[in-house]
Amino acid sequence: MKKVFSILSITGLMFLSSAQSIYAQTEQVVEDKTFHQELKLRFIEGGPFFMGIVLVTLILGLAIAIERIIYLNMATTNTDKLVNSVEEAMSSGGVEAAKEVCRNTKGPVASIFYQGLDRMDEGVEAAEKAVVSYGGVQMGLLEKNVSWLSLFISLAPMLGFMGTVIGMIGAFDSIEAAGDISPAVVAGGIKVALLTTVFGLVVAIILQIFYNYIISKIDGIVNSMEDASIKLVDLLIRNK
Image 1: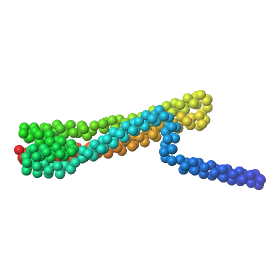
Image 2 (image 1 turned 90 degrees about the horizontal axis):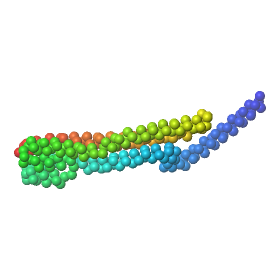
Image 3 (image 1 turned 120 degrees about the horizontal axis):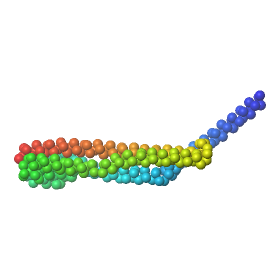
Image 4 (image 1 turned 180 degrees about the vertical axis):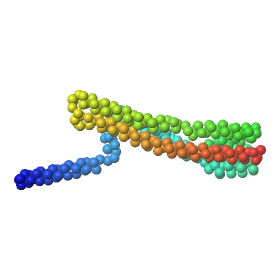
């Protein structure tokens, strides 16, 4: 009995020692891999076809998001300063001076002001209609291509889930071919399924953050446009 206990003790110690050695080696291998290498490995394991399509959606979505952010930042102006400048110009030089201020100012608010001032000779009502109409045009320019970004946000996880289904089909095909349901047979297909899903969700999360920022930026600019348009109409009424 003592001999059996001694043998079991020695075997257990040898097993623990081997497990610790394997764990240390595995940990060292993981530490040696950089993030770029790990990402590249997972991308290849997920399958080039579906992972490539999801990557294309990420690239196109980021391109649209960056273009919209740059455009919206350039379209943001200090409306209070513009209103004061237009009012001072109208007081000193009339409508033409106010139009010159709008021409020298970038952004949708200045463009709307210019259209309203350009119709001033036709009356306040005509100027107000011009402001409303051109405001709709500027809103369309602000929202340009945002619908495509929304499409990519929806498309990325769908493609990931499609890769998941195809990976599971591959796993069942392997089971059917091997006539066995061992983990080694289905592990490859399940790994492909999980990797495509994760990658699709990560892409959707990244694009969703940019989408929400862009929408909030557009809402802020539109609110400024509406407030400035009301101030312009009041200014035109006072100076008609």
